[in-house]
Amino acid sequence: MGRLNIPAVRIVLYLDDGWSVNRDYHSSLLDSGFVFDTLKRAGFVVNFEKSVVKPVNNLSWLGLIWNSEEHSICIPETRIVDLFQSIDHVLSSLRNVSARLLAQVTGRIISMSPVIGNIARIKSRHLYRCIESRFTWDQSFRLIDQAVIEELLFWKFHIRSLNLRKLSEYKISSIVFYSDASNHACGVVTVQGKFDLFHKMWTKEEADSSSTWKELKFIELFLRTFQDSLSGKVVKGFTDGKNCESIVMSGSTKSDLHKIAISIFSLCSECSINLEVKWLPRDQNTVADAASKIFDYDDWGVTLEFFDFVNSIYGPHTVD
Image (cartoon, rainbow, N blue to C red; front, top):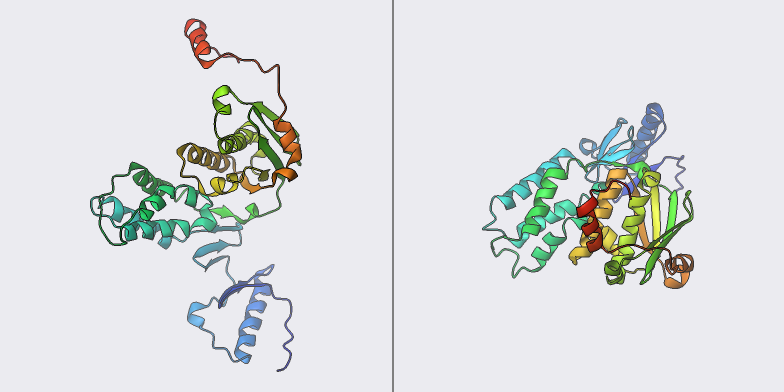
């Protein structure tokens, strides 16, 4: 075989489907001509009906619309319509639903994850639970689970507002934090950013919660407290709570943890925070661990019951 000398053509390829990119229309056109000519000379038969020969700014590839002007990806309208039809089919036949039909809806939602993000898994938890409880794929049953119906309605009314992802979101983290929660307090230490340490003492009720709840809750509190500083940034967090990474990404079967996961997603969506949470072994999270063990002896307060009593007499209060 002879050697094929190929100039620098930037091509991304998935199996037999790919595209190239260059700085302007003319350069892209030259690349296109070179690629097609090379394939022809190598003995390949090009399907021109399914090929885009002339450079474009909007390209449909792997079920997504790639926009080089806005540097974004979105879901084609045809896929949105297909999802709506599947959801409407389920909602119109709640007395006669099959696991296969629910799986079709769920599969279409999950396939949109590259654009809509981890909310695809968080807001399909109950759908999965319902599917997994099946006896057979095609046996009909009456769908009365309100949590499943609420998830279906969520996607029907919110998928369009979620249908855009800027490719600029995929970049190096601008804020990195390490968090840990102990029985009496929690702490976050940041590597980048103007805040170095964030510390909070747990209330008695919070202290009695599970360690996973405390780890997750503190991530939510950290994001909510510094949302103005974190807005529009890529944030990466490390925690030694082993379940936190998966719960932030996919939600939880436990309602209290799932509620926090939804709250974290909503906050990140509202503030354009691109959050990634990773698990870190405890022996590598020593600084945050030390921060979580700080005991603030001056952190006094009254019980909620006593505050409500005082507030009923002198309230409502406007200053904390």
